[in-house]
Image (cartoon, rainbow, N blue to C red; front, side):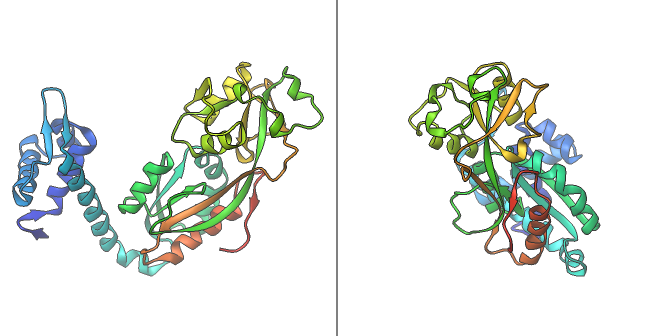
Length: 307
């Protein structure tokens, strides 16, 4: 398959170089010689009339125009893959490849309960999973690299549809020796914003916690890259945090060093949903996926009935 002398393989070379930042490593990943890969990249640059990559002595990076070329190359390859899988997908529901993204504060806890039922219900499903921050996953979804993304609204839903899965209340995580661990009732308004331990910027859970713990103008003194590290920081006595109920294993955690409290404002929490492109042609597959994820959510969450 060619267009102006280009093949899909040439586009694969371009994407590989963008992913690896190195012609040699990209050639190894594509299982071709470096001269062959370099020739393919030059073909793309000559055909479209722009330089795709900036080459330095230390690394290779896309030019500003090249970033758009790489983005469109990914979309073309994703569309070609869907075309080749059309025959398989037409024979059975949720059969063939399905690329599912999930934000880091949901994926590990949801998949622990839903993957086994999903594979049992749809044995012909070839599932791949990608974890990341919301904005990155939405970009991957819009460019066709992902079929659906598990996330927590609100988001920029332009061109997207959302299927609510479940409601997840927040729990207060405190060090076991903290006075809050034995207080009869804990109100969010009574928490000192300066003592909050939050996730790094980019996590939607961070924004949700900030909106409850003193507003977005507050700069936390301590942040964590993951929810599990955040729990460890609470266990070390650094501060308190709000943790989604699906990530709470019980009344205590980390060998009893962390204690979880139910907030007086029981409705405080978040919604978890499945996002997909509005232009997608096989919506039934996404709905089936949503049904499994909704019916097998983490303990402590509440399924949102219907799709």
